[in-house]
Length: 142
Image (cartoon, rainbow, N blue to C red):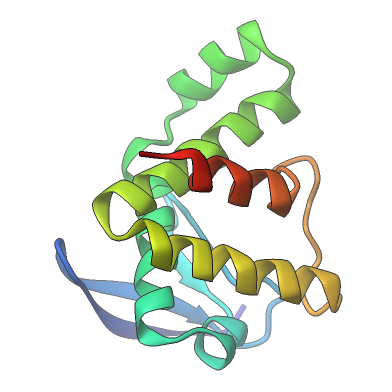
């Protein structure tokens, strides 16, 4: 998989290096984890404003900083794997809204919704809850 390192200055955090995946097997926007760091696809650059990119990276920072095997095992003991994954996505959205900006996080999710509706990016229901539910939960945050 061909990639290129990109510098990204995340407000409230500082400079990061993110992996730009040039030709992924499946289109995606961004993903992150403690082992692989943060990866982005061309859609990250093509569809999102600078502020929306910041919200996206804050979301992925949650996965990078707080996703652990132990936490996943614990969640899967109490929930099925899909529910455990969905809980982590909701927490990552909340992390972006709280650490960056609620309104911009909503804007980011609304663009994700359009990309899903247009089938530019396909939502994986095993790992990601319905986008409208994610939007609804962020709207409810104080």
